[in-house]
Image (cartoon, rainbow over all chains, first blue to last red; front, side, top):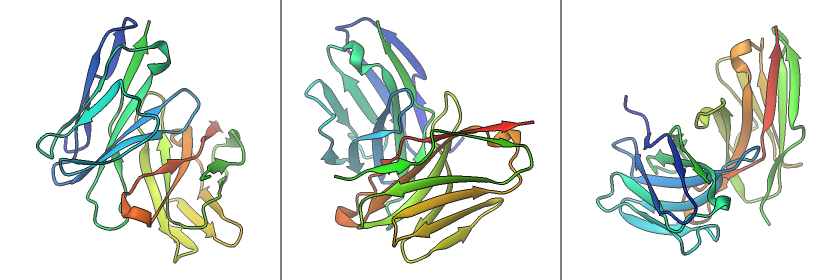
Length: 114
Length: 114
């Protein structure tokens, strides 16, 4: 399977715990995005990487959130001291970055904070 | 501010009929638009895209129409099938910074009645 892969698919955590999600983009794609989607809403942009450089972060990305893409391939999104409001689907997408091109999404990680 | 919205939250059609899903956007600088299909528990799936220098683009059973004068986008699905049942999102991006960051609307749920 050469699509965007996310792990885990589901995560249930207690409030206050830290969680980390992983995204493996399509191998030749140099652009990687994280989005958050709550029930009944469209995905909202969180952050964007061009290779290993994090070039844009949304105001939605509070200090408790951090994302990395250390070698320009896979990326991780960590949420510290989770809150119930963090419960959402976290989506990763990648694109080739050659002008306007379609972004391919992974299946997402569903986070539930209890 | 930027916004992308859809006119109807839910559209119900009979199998075999044509479906039209509408979207309005507010950013006149938007120059690239994508329609995504999202099934329950899955990530958004690319359907079709259109650049602002075009007003119509056709794919397999789908057509996207763009009216830049009124900032309106529509997705037409011919001979709608039960497998088309999903939530449909329009998304836009624009050339500023050329990050490829997508702004999504809230989505229209398409229900196909057998």
